Image (tube, rainbow, N blue to C red; front, side, top):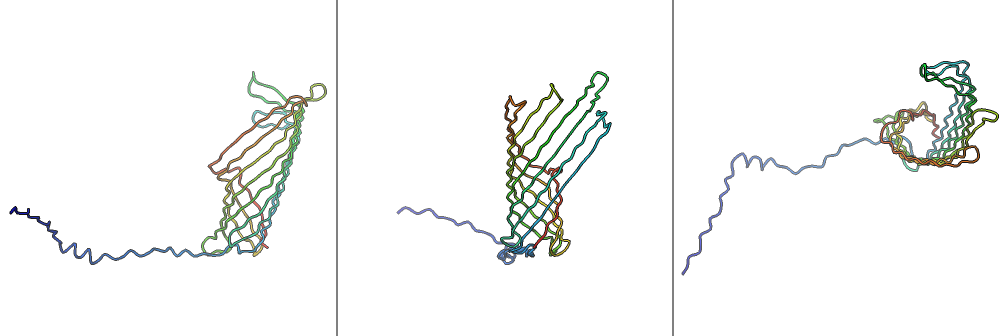
Length: 250
């Protein structure tokens, strides 16, 4: 008879340190941050706001850097009402409408870039008015347990357009152009809200992320027609888009 080979089992030596480690091992418990949730804007609240800006300037033989003998008038006006409704605590949807009008009348101006680079312009006229409609979705976050100071994150879908008119020179040398513009934008706008009372607050916001599309049709001297399209994506803080406004929570 053939003998079967003998199988030797490996012996595991358990040290006292390993025994202590096995005794001390316990099941891992779930970790909860226990963040406190404070309702900053309750469900069912209406949020109404209005921002108005106006600027005007007159120049008479004004000089600035390379510009000399600047004579003209400019003004701009913008009004932007909005209305939102809180569909849930700290969550609101709404709409904003904006209208902007700007006028520039330049009688004369000289540009001095040096002895061999001097030229002037006369009788420039520009008038534009634009209008925008924006869908808004906003989330609010309170700072700690405060009901006076809070943050919000706003998602915007904006569509708009406008017309512009440009002319230069006078008489037989008169030349001009007429533009029609279509504008679309999707953006994320964070901001800060500070309640001055139970029903009024001041808001500050700045554009961070966004994608916009612009299509412009130009008719020059009522003869020549041209089109211009542009797309732009922004993934940085735009300091020129900082806006201030007042809102009323009803």
